[in-house]
Length: 175
Image (tube, rainbow, N blue to C red):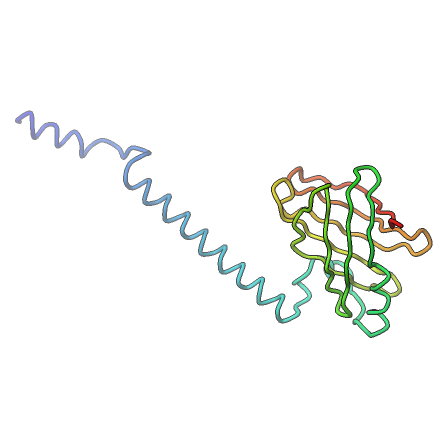
């Protein structure tokens, strides 16, 4: 057998290298499939939010929130104002809450951090607040708070998504 034929035959008999063309194509296909799946899930999630599905908001999960009434809209206004988390100096400013519970909120640490979603719900006579942050260091971190009218403060849990840890927190109303 000639040297040339021998080299060709040896190449064909070698197992595929992990970094070979097939591996690259396989990896690219997997990434593309995952991207398409993520896009479909994202679109379906947006659909659920537009149709008012209960699965659309984490604040509505776990507990059945009472239907929003004009009186509830009045109650939501009590949440408006600046709230200070004393142990860190963080400020949650609730600028407005509409009758549906959608909040216009700003979070300061001390610079503004993007609030992806902020909403108020009512569970019986209890007012609840849900705030989701989206920024570097805060990728999906959330506050799930309950308003305590006697103490005039928001109490609840802060979930730090980057650390995957939850912390008990309190926000006191600022004067």
